[in-house]
Length: 197
Image 1 (cartoon, rainbow, N blue to C red):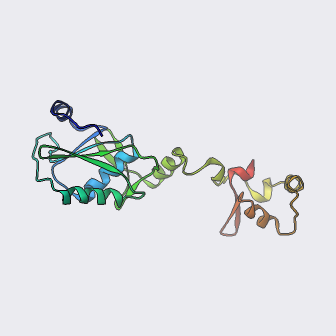
Image 2: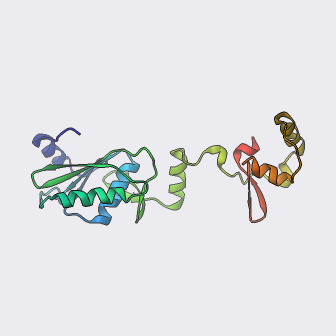
Image 3: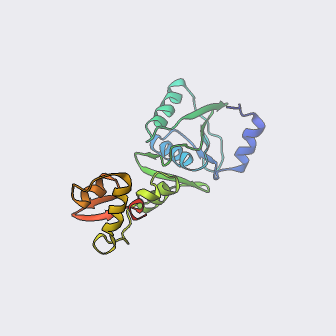
């Protein structure tokens, strides 16, 4: 990590909070975890500890114990997040890189950086985010539009089994489940997109 000089530090202070900068007056474990997760789920950023929201330098004593506590907070995110710390006078800067294993969460939930604030994601937003990040693949998604009783074609299954030299010696639903193209949910056979194709 490149060491921040005084001019860069002053520039960032004047710029204020935004998409990549967060000010925190003191160490609040839950608040810090939320910001770390939000930056890791976005494009990364820096958290300045010892600066009030309005950009006033408050500062505090920075110890190795404090730095270790910050590393523990980041490690306790799910999955674990690596952070780097840097000290400028009595300000501690926590640098969070964009995560490579999104989405990340902390005990308060999933967060995403949006402008100068970190927004908690709803259940549907988490699902959309997971799909966007490739954690839920298109071919594995269940497709409610396909009705097993009306749309399933046994002849196509027989043709596939013939090409793969597999025998049809167990019930159809079991064959499809073994091939990972359906899930049986509450007694109903649901095809995923790969199964439909």
